[in-house]
View (cartoon, rainbow, N blue to C red):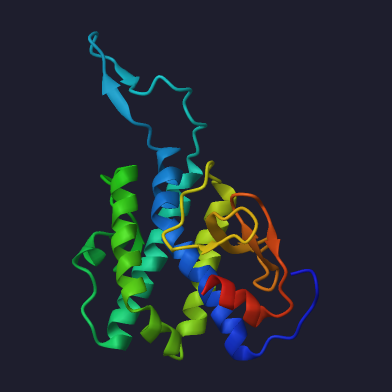
Length: 218
């Protein structure tokens, strides 16, 4: 939005929650992609030597991607464990598939492949989204929402993917091109810096209040 408006606490939380939900939906693919930059897929050729299986140019090697994704995974495992305790429900069985040191979650186990890492995160994300409404009404909900955006939006900025993964939600229909591609676009880390835009034709829907933004993306 180009104008500066005051947000009441309820609207501000709803806007941050909408961004966090989208961030979580993108997290499995982001984790898998980032780890693929540091864990190349290898095959064995007829001479017995390992070779890259893809004929495409290799992605730039990023050793830091292991540490970054380990940290993100450890933090989301900690949140799932926390919510299981707060909501008095069982965590997903895969929550134990984590590398620990001195009893503290550190990240993925050494044998985790990029695809496997993404699947583990997907299980945790699905578990969280099933309990989304209960999480938002809990006193720790706002802290969790802020942390989700802190964890994964930082990764997204450091390991951008193109093209972007299709959204899991049903987007609203664009009044200009007719495509169901209307959604929220955040232009910066500031949750207030949001626009309602069509991904197909880039038309930006005029909105005068943040409540109108939520009406479009809800």
